[in-house]
Image (cartoon, chains in turn cyan, brown):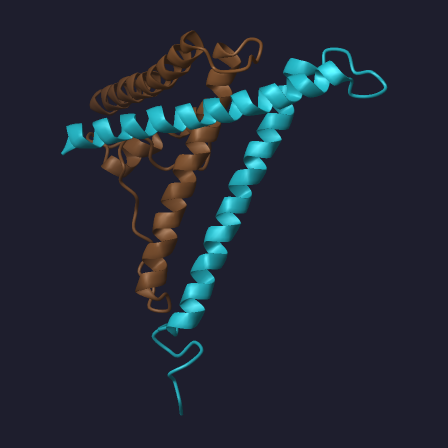
Length: 95
Length: 117
């Protein structure tokens, strides 16, 4: 019997299917991350920009939403940087 | 179960309430290796472990961005001004300090309870 492809006992996958699996996992994580960010921005920017919901999104509301999105992403990136630096400091302190 | 000296894993779990249910480690970057399973390809297993660590960290960033946005950003302007940047950066640092302080103190309380028995 040929065990060199597919899923033989011992679990050694061939490198093509391994690569495919890994890139799928990466893609799904990236997608989940983007969805989380979208959801947060919708929630936060609705709160900041729409105080009295009218019949349409007016011009100033749309401008506010665009600005709010950009600032939320700035904030996200800043938080990510500061958090990463802190993690590095803490892990070098521990070792 | 309370032990006198909490293992590292238990210490990291103390952070959970402050960072959300799924987080395993916040400051202390120790992650349990996946359970040894013969069926799992070791390369795939370590890849999955790495990716889930990254996903955990990203989840923390989402959480912190939420908290600090609420506290620091009043009206979104055409850029983040330096006062807001300072506020966000302090917010992240103090949030972590707070969870560390609480985790340490909580651990002492647990140890005290165990010592009194």
